[in-house]
Length: 99
Length: 195
Image 1 (cartoon, one colour):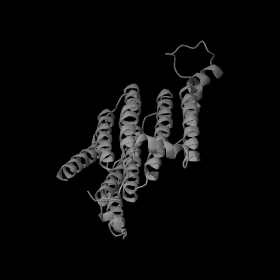
Image 2 (cartoon, chains in turn green, cyan):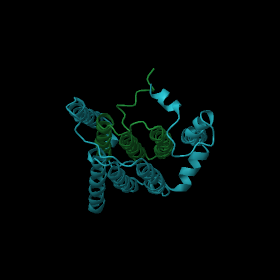
Image 3 (tube, one colour):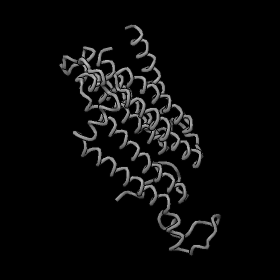
Image 4 (cartoon, chains in turn purple, blue):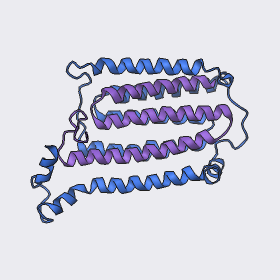
């Protein structure tokens, strides 16, 4: 398969994730859609690494997975803190971090 | 090479269906399960791209550990069905439109980039391409600084998660004392936070 196919697929996955981040209101699902976008970036990195025949892209994809894990831990921690403080689990209602 | 093509299209369809499921399913629990399907499809694509170690890490770490964390939080909070089309709102219309624009733009950028190697299967590969040995050697020699930065970042995230999860107890100790029961109404501090 040509590398272009993988890149086009990663573009579609990224767009789907962006649509989810914009239109969903549950912060859990927004985090999942962020994962989708990071994974699309991973796929593009690995495809370019295949194209060049070097493994640097795979190492960067590994680092991106670490970043995604950190983001999940902090995001889920914030959601659990919201739940414990009896705040509504809805990003439209969560405006206290502003300013 | 028809086997590789069939495998690519099956994995790509799985990944795309999983991604659509994450966005379109109302129940967050099903969204998480749909993301697991998406991650497994991506792992197959990584295997097709000769990234064996990354595919294994994707399945074990991502689809295994991280998704279990998600499932625990969804079960703890209680997955609430969310209407996909909120009352009126331009977001429901603007979101898909923005996504379509991004997709078209990215595809145009890829296809018209003029990179000649894009239309090939890629460079000739050595025998151990993508194996754990080569990745590990790169991580410990050329990419030592990003590796250490990532480990430090994981430490910071772990400490941050402990601080976030233990915050309620801190409020209790400062407020009404440590003897307050679990099921008592929340201390007044939380009310002030909301105002």
